[in-house]
Length: 364
Length: 179
Image 1: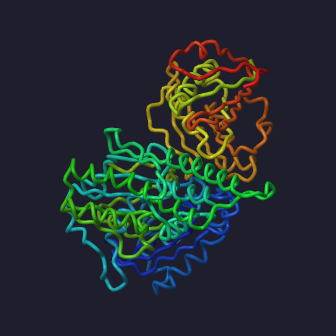
Image 2 (image 1 turned 90 degrees about the vertical axis):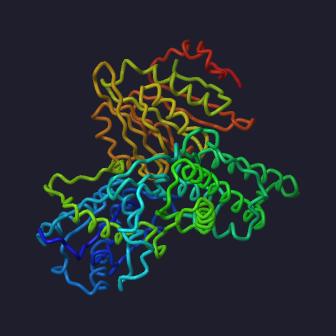
Image 3 (image 1 turned 135 degrees about the vertical axis):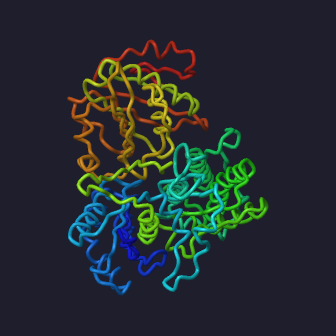
């Protein structure tokens, strides 16, 4: 089979409907339709609403992607779709659309692991074929990939493209989930993680002592459940104190903007250090020369700065995608991954058998 | 016994309680679905309990938060039979009928053991009484790591073995007695 170059990528793994078009590694289009507003009243993604929104949004997102890429349907040479990890009934929508397109256009289909997409987003180039932080030939194996997202926190040893080994992961909540839940506790709304990071800029990260769990665990795993609980307790104590300081019994005391900012900064510092501590251990233990960052939380400035410092100290290089658009859930990364997989002839052989795999583990 | 309460003083004790409680329903596993419905606020120990429950069922895989995928599926072996264990986060489902969208009927039909996490304000009565179940409410105690767990079950349970378990430093409160 002729190696396909123009790949249509589809990702509906959670609450963003995304369609991307790439020419080899060049991103021609990466349309993302966010459902944040839809889910905000519920404080999290509601599966049925997500599915309906994916179904409703897909045609327009698809059309916009083709339009932005300046191609027509017939130019598509292969279709890549996220099979997992993700929300089952959301994944189903993208897979169904991908199957229909593959049938209708008679083009091959490639099933992609969402986390592998986050890692390979590092190889995406802009439209002109520039700005990629690294080329596939330049990777020094084994490398370390740090995947930080709403549903995933993993330290992955990359032995080769397509061959991964999880060497550390969260034992409970994901880091992105911790940010979002922390934001909820502080009344910052939904999704809130980015808002928390922004509010943290005005705060003092040393104002409050919050735990950095799992330091003594003797492995590279992290935990965020305890941090969340510690923040909840702290907020309650502070609210009780504030209540005691005002006369009115009728109105509940609200925390001042300064205190909220300090809480955000202290929480962010604890969440980031929890992870960077284990990254440093991994570097000491395995001496990786390259560290790849991927996932929505890769946009966090403090995390990037801390990792940059740590990697420099250990003579390693920190690599992240050229735009934050490629860090969040997006379909261009799925298309790039599809292109690399097509090179290995990893096509779906029976369309009818392709099914979503919400808890799919990275291929080893 | 249909009702009771227990106080645990650490996440480890909450886990231990989960592991011991897993043993109380062994006769049902694989023959009919069993639901552990867990209600409580963020950080009240529901996931800790599920970690213990899973270990009590013999599951060695890491139990992580289902908040993102809403459902995490595992399996365990009992008398050579493979039984599904489902960890469900229903916090964000506006209606419990929305459980259907994440595969509720399929889980029941497969005689799964289901750990169902709920928001604290959900009524317990929404689960059909035909399903073997225990509803556990998790509340914060005064000391930092203390939690009070109140349970209601629709089948008779024998808590003697749990009370006698010396590894569980939890205080047992019989029904009707004040804390």
